Amino acid sequence: MQFRLTFQEISDLIERKAGRSLPVMYGGPHTVRISYEVNMFVKTASVGLDLTVDQVDENGNIILSYNGGMGIDFMIKTALNHAKSQPGGDMIDLLPDNRILLNLSKNAQAGSLFEHVTLKDISFDEQFAIIEFVPKGF
Image 1: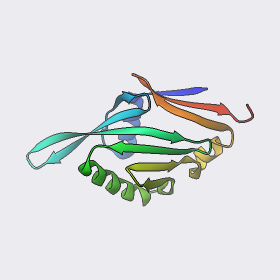
Image 2: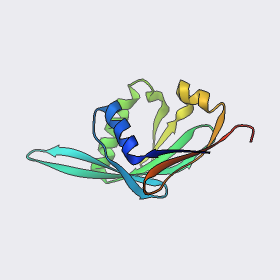
Image 3: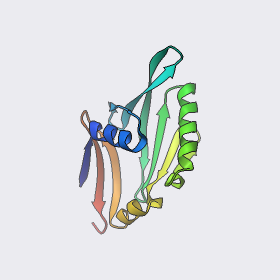
């Protein structure tokens, strides 16, 4: 079974939850590109980040990797440290080599979902993020 979200739906969700516009675009079969506007003294610069789904397991653990240079690394670490102090922050762990672990089963709603389905893959095409899963017992 598949669940599909358009990149615009993902961008809108991020804006509603974070209050910040982060356009999400296709970057490859397991990669999305995210752009972020940074105010630098007298001008605004667009900073890009590639976020790749490296691994998905049946327990709801997702390992992501990112690249974008030292400035991006600093911004990601700062944002993740802030996120860890927020509700749901216990689901996020920063791993070595620019990787992030999302343990979705630590979220009550997602955890109850994983009692009934097994996450198989997260991939992307030109228009959609595609989340593949199978019901447990199949």
